[in-house]
Image 1 (tube, rainbow, N blue to C red):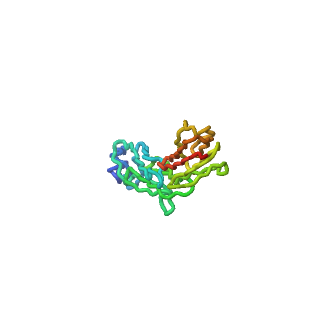
Image 2 (image 1 turned 120 degrees about the horizontal axis):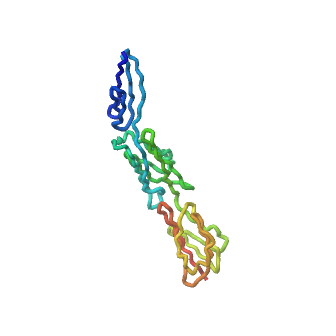
Image 3 (image 1 turned 90 degrees about the vertical axis):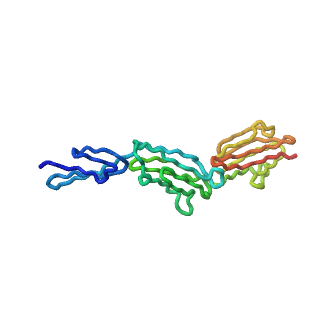
Length: 239
């Protein structure tokens, strides 16, 4: 007798008819078994997967010290029209556990939220992965330390002191004024200010200006980080 019978151990995900035709009816996995009349069996695992996963990231960079302290990541799932139970969605971020982790993470189904913690020295990067069966999507969240700006040419005759979170600097005559940030920033200042004799260089970490004395004129500079930190530098020429 060559009669065989087919069965699925998870018919809410995979169905099979008595001709062995397999059909996905949901997401997940099932064991499909074929059994002969004399009792012999063979089993194969079948996975019904989503079509694709993409991620929407609210904020790529966060900081405990900025206005952007947290971010939400949302998984956009093309599931071929099937319901996606939360039990199939797995989030992982190896740098979000433990006392010294750069951020904490909470998970709610298709979304994961990261909140910045203290970071020392340099910006930390946190790889985040969401996985459903064999499909996955990845992104990286960056956590900034506290923004710090320094005058890198102290011997040039520019004197700087901290007061109420601002960097107050004074100089006489014509000087080179070099600023350096510990993290990536954008520099905001009036490029038409008469105090600026020339711009020697500028990038995401450095600002190099030639400055000169102009009566009753000063220069305000702001360094803005991606996570909303701001450092204000006030440059005042003196006689």
